[in-house]
Amino acid sequence: MHSTSVKELLSTPPASQEVTVNGWVKTFRSNRFININDGSIIHNIQCVVDFESLDQHLLKQITVGAALRVTGKLVESQGSGQAVEIQVTDIFVHGLADTEDVKLTVLSPKKHSLEFLREQAHLRVRTNTFGAIMRVRSALSFAIHQYFQQNGFYYFHAPIVTGSDAEGAGEMFRVTTLDPKKPPLTEEGDVNYKDDFFGKETNLTVSGQLEAEAYAMALGKVYTFGPTFRAENSNTSRHLAEFWMIEPEVAFNDLDDNMDLAEDFIKNVISYVLENCKEDLQFLEKRLLDEEKTKPQIERSEMALIEKLEFVSQNTFKRVSYTEAIDILRNSKPNKKKKFKYLINEWGADLQSEHERYLVEKHFKCPVILFDYPAKIKAFYMRLNEDGKTVRAMDILFPGIGEIVGGSQREERLDVLKEKMETLGIPEEELWWYLDLRKFGTAEHSGFGLGFERLVLFATGMGNIRDVIPFPRTPQNAEF
Ligand code: ATP
Ligand code: MN
Image 1 (cartoon, rainbow, N blue to C red):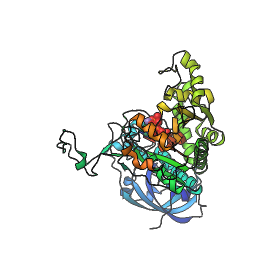
Image 2 (cartoon, protein in one colour; image 1 turned 135 degrees about the vertical axis):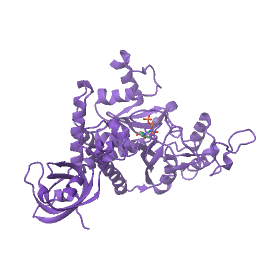
Image 3 (spheres, helix red, strand yellow; image 1 turned 30 degrees about the horizontal axis):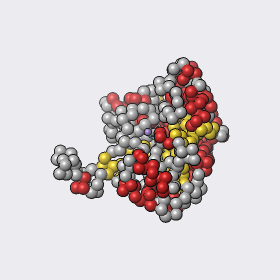
Image 4 (cartoon, rainbow, N blue to C red; image 1 turned 135 degrees about the horizontal axis):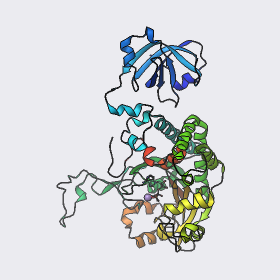
């Protein structure tokens, strides 16, 4: 049967035409006003029933959460709050809502804690907040593909199961079909992975970068957008064990080109949601304001959500070298007053999120790109600078988030790369193919990784990464 979405109905001029809509009951007031939502938009459509003429049995079935098909006339609304409403002529109940089950409370308009909703992740998306978040998430994904496709990039699918454990981006999840109770053993008594499915040790990917480099060295500009896995036992509001990452890689780009690309890309996708997700952002902005009312003044954001997104999309990111950043941090108030958990004493220190957030939120008050990090605290594949101690790395730091992007110009010189791997004890056999790329037409090239959920966190104003992915995977938690 032909039906129209709530989104479409709300922007249709009412002329008493017959319409049909499918959706779930949000509220039912005075036996007369059914508010229906179908997920197409944050707003509901009001359906007005004449309960005197409605079958009593049917009336009882219309409860919060039930799935209905409603037919009626689209008319100008009598009440305030909505432009149009449906004068109901027919109702069909697709499915009842179990009013005995306490989980039904998730669907009621009552406010619930985000922690509680996480336990009901299959139902939370029916709430206004999660509906809005997931629509913004979807729009951002589209904007990401659109940006790259319009700028000459090819979408590259990196493997999920990888045979190299040298990527060094984080702890990995092993992939195996061996029986954990009695795995085949070598003569030395170790597990014999030669007998495993792939004939070697394999893991879930932590990054598609190394493979993307191979493709950039042929297709020129590529990007990945896929799931990545890190077995990091860090229970923070910024880390997931399974998250989605966007990794562009571009042949012939140096670090400056890489920073330009990252900045332009982020601004572009944020502008896209500002233009295309207005109503959801307005709702999320209000949610954030309400949430922050309960917090002390100093913990509240200086800007409302939409203003913050506009600020980021319109202002230049501040580019600062690691060395400059260390000077700023060393002389900062929290460092001198020993307020940082990790005090900055010398050049070479790894920056913790408290330092990153100080730079972005207190010192520069705008997104910051830090570059030229000490080689010692960065990955083996980053290009060594002339000074011999820093590498062409860059991280983008965002207010409220900390690191959102990590990238670099890659080491394209075979001899320098080999030397680096040797010092770090990375066997050449592991990455023979990666070294090959430096043997056959090597060239400078650069790329970065952007954690998709951290971008969604920023765009939605949410505080915990578990609330911007449908079914979060974190230590001790893989429900659903
Ligand atoms: P962090 O220091 O925050 O753990 P990282 O240095 O490990 O980040 P990279 O290896 O550079 O991060 O990964 C690229 C991007 O992927 C990061 O900038 C971040 O946006 C995102 N990211 C990294 N780890 C996670 C995670 N566990 N969950 C969600 N996003 C992540
Ligand atoms: Mn990490």
